[in-house]
Length: 459
Image (cartoon, rainbow, N blue to C red):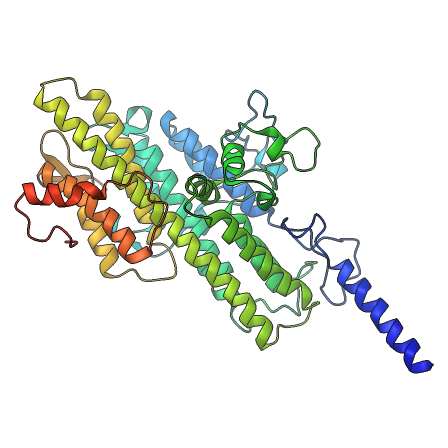
């Protein structure tokens, strides 16, 4: 009888323990998750916290909006995460009220201290911080964030590069990288002194924040997640039903937005795959109950980590593919206008915007844990330091004073072919599947017209 009672008691305890560790909003929502830190006796009940990461998402969006003003001091204030900053973007829109108006209502943080510190070969071999600060300085010297003499659209360059150099870099290299190693941020100790979450819990949560997804993204379709980012669907965004959108947990940002933009085409499921892997890995950490993970648990956690890193890389590679295609189409349009001696101003501006997005995403792709080696060399050389300009010149470097160096550009036809070769490179090296703006069908004919014998190869 005593044995039966003990078994029954154990089952009740096990059920209660499992129930207490159940997801607060169901298995499709990231958090809340219970406190597992052993010895914690405070009043916190939710171990999830990634406020600093979401503050950085807002700092990025606000910085992007500021580039066109040319106000360097203001750009730097958001880059450095100074106190008392208003949210410039995303702000409330008609039918889409946003809860917060100040960055500090979400959390604290900066972009400058989290930049990728390595060299950026595609931007004069400056370091990550040097490259983005150089871009901001140059943006302050031109009107509207665009320099027609170089073709640089700084709004696009700064935004797309920053997303990779801060968000992607910090998540995959640090929080899902070094901090997941044995002995680093252990799960049987607080993340830092006085914290109510463990080392592994908080590291994983912060990576999720850098991903930029709404916590409830798995309850929505790709189209709905996309429309949330565009501030067009309050019903999908407002998960808790309070009538406003909480930028901490209900908004779609950055690479999560781009994932949804590809997934809504029906060929990929990057957003759902990454979010599910974040949830799966967090459950492994949760179920450890505040102790260090055993071999099996750690294997499962790292498997989820690898799914996140691999698919996140593909999202950025998809973006390189997309904007290489856009740039190709812009060159075709420009050639038609030039042949007819027409006005190229509007078409050139569109071309510069798309090339800036291509360049920014290409730089971002090189901020991950993997040395891309020859792939990066090919990508950087084919797209150039700067776009080919209408006067047949091109920025080819930057001098020690930060001034751009120009030289004779590659031929338009060659540059156009290189855009297609970049698309092929993304397919061959990263296996992109959405392939928005796919122009590869034109590759063989274009190469043939140029007399190229290596139409199926990359330079």
